[in-house]
Amino acid sequence: MSIPFVKMQGAGNDFVVLDAREKDLALPPQIVRRIADRRLGVGCDQLIVLERDPEAQADVFMRILNADGTEAGACGNATRCVAALLAEENGERRVTVRTVTGLLPAEILGPGLVEVDMGPPRLDWEGVPLSGAMDTLHLNLSMGPVSDPAACSMGNPHVTFFVDDLAHLPIESIGPVLEKHKLFPERANVGFAQIESPTRIRLRVWERGAGLTLACGSGACATLVNAYRRGLTGRSAMVVMDGGELLIGWNEIGHVTMRGPAETSFVGALEAWV
Image 1 (spheres, rainbow, N blue to C red):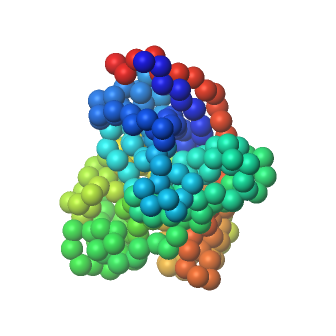
Image 2: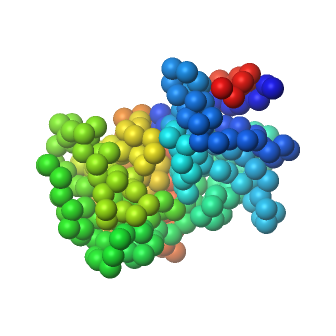
């Protein structure tokens, strides 16, 4: 059986997009891991499955499967990519994507440039979620050279450490441990942010289920929220990651907006599931 796919990327965060709107696809975790494998499969940070919106309010339902086969609740870069794909398909400048965490309106601003309303962040400990009641602005958590992070949810749990020297952090060794810390019952995306100015943040993210990626859209949103809460930035900033830049804003109605690139890398077909 041949299954068409589109390989897309947003600021270096890359995805294999499959269309299941007309026919369901069987995607057990071992198949997801195989497709996501950069040597044995197509290779991606997340596998994205397009489905019909069960409530018929959005243009599409977007299911997000991490490279390890687990399901995620949000992915900002994938949302931009899917919005660009839908806009090309239906000729509309505005589209709405549904994920398991809600509706995400998106607007095409120009060729390869998309803005998404990621909705309001969850700032309470239960919404992140954390393992117990605590102040999400200052968590009692440290490992090696990092400490005192802030946490919030952008549809998935994020924790942000603010650091002075991002370039020399041992993220590959501390990231996987922090991701699975007992404070995070659903694991966490772990961001390491260096404030370069009130309008510019340098960020690297260890993603839950995917590892260290070139960019993390929801992580960029969470970082801006946490930085503003700490008084480190204004309500908008350019977030610079290894794969590109995202303009993040936290607007007057409390929603977080994300503007950045969305590109198709290539198209192909999966000839087998194993």
